[in-house]
Image (cartoon, rainbow, N blue to C red; front, side):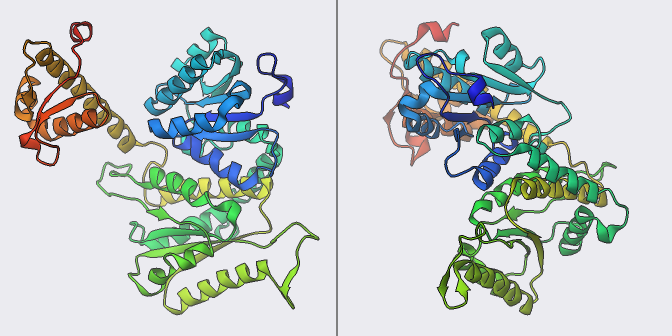
Length: 444
């Protein structure tokens, strides 16, 4: 196993932790599988940096404490240029430097060959590099190195995961629809939503280990099916909204609305037949176990919803194992592809995500212009506090004045700008300047 073949720098004898740095499909699949299948005492425990939230990153690194020296860092990004992943990597590398550790001796990259990340890892001499292929999107990457490497390091049987996925794929190749699980599931979605996403999908797994399944499916379904145009260029605004938590927790959360409120959903019950490993169950009262209560809650809720004309789908597995989880992943990946064909859209691109990334880049570019204007005004003697309108005018961006206000409010909250007059509660009253003049930055 890799944890015994590759070691951290001396004097440590073995890795003890995994820190996975990725976002979206590079995190949601591995998180789901870790929650579902990792043993109680895995050979390597895993943590995730899956956002560009500084406080969240600090928390994950702080939780590692001295074990940072025995942490294997897996950085996952197909292009190597995803900003959130890059930021997480830079923050982790800073933590390594401050701890006197050499990051390259503990870093692993999963990325496309010759990407920015791949080249960086090769040049810096990281421990290992694993390939991602161009045709594999993040949300369909769980059965690639993206999901299999961290799973294997946690002691999860990835061969069984692949075997389960292969069995499901074989079942989904039949052209007899009633015998094709993915086709049946996709047709259920089409029926429930009128083929236009008219209802939401509520995913209710009745098993704690499947808690994150709804989050995983949220990206898989919504990013794949949420499209403005069909394959013929017609504006269709397709998609199915997905949410959920777990049973029977949800019965104390929102089942009340599902049964008696607005009928704008269909439920997917995920039923797991085996409660505990054989020989470990016991009766709370004569003839009734804890698992019997969970079973009763599932089928009671299903019946109660049906009695009020609320639609549901039931997916049943024998138990939560690497084989059944691999089969579930394959089932939903194929169902998404079939549904996309039914409604004539491309399930495998994400122009809306790319538009969001482009817009974020434009905000950061505007922030640099705001900083330059404030820097120039702050270098004057005396310092020249500027109004919001003056900043916008000097940035030649009067149409972006609201965004400029947001930028200034964010900088002020983080002590990177000083509001000399007024408050953010009254934007037009504020006058702002930078706390320090940075001539080098201004003329760089």
